[in-house]
Amino acid sequence: MYETDQEQIEAMKGWWNQNGNWVIGGFLVFILTFVGYHWYQSATQNHRLEASAIYEELLVNITAEVVDTEQQADLVHTLKQDYSDLGYATFASLLHAKSAVESEDYEAALTELQWAEENSANELKSVIRYRIALVNYQVGELDIALAKLDAIEGEGHEAVTFELRGDVLLEQGNKADARIAYQTAVNASEEQGIDNPYLKIKLDDLAVAE
Image 1: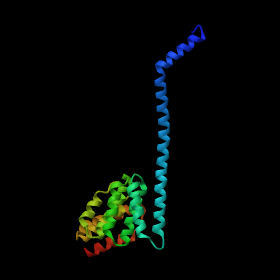
Image 2 (image 1 turned 180 degrees about the vertical axis):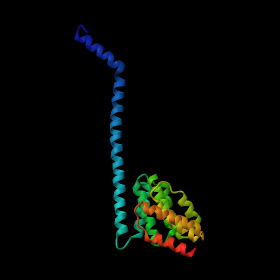
Image 3 (image 1 turned 60 degrees about the horizontal axis):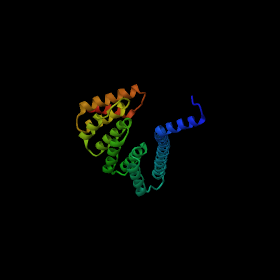
Image 4 (image 1 turned 30 degrees about the vertical axis):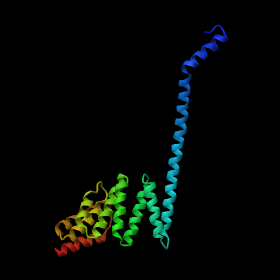
């Protein structure tokens, strides 16, 4: 206890002289952390909104009656270069690859798909690898297509991947393994409740040929 107010004041001055710098420093750290966090949150949100706006513009371009291919390429490039940390860039690359396939520019399609594979989230890689294998098959790169199919992980895609595997193997003249692949695809389709009459026709045609 202090006997006089003056003693209390002097004690407070002494405490401040010893601890004032720490108090000020701690307060500044708190302010900087608070401001920095909210700046980061704002910057992150703006970054995402910008990417979303560019992606929406890309969708408008792709679905237009007359597609501006130059603008499409610029929009995709911007998303890939400045927003590769977001899913918008991957989906833009996949859309661009689809447009390239429709134009029969398979080299450009593979370039986009390979970029998407390298920069996508893990849960998308199986779908992307399937699309790469499909383009490889279309251009006659059969061994590469099989290797890409082998790299597909997870479950739930067997109906389509084994059908494509059968197509590739049949193209290679390997009818026995093609039949096994088609049958695996048929079994997977039935398990998933998928009716794919064309797949059954492929299997039946192969049995007749054999």
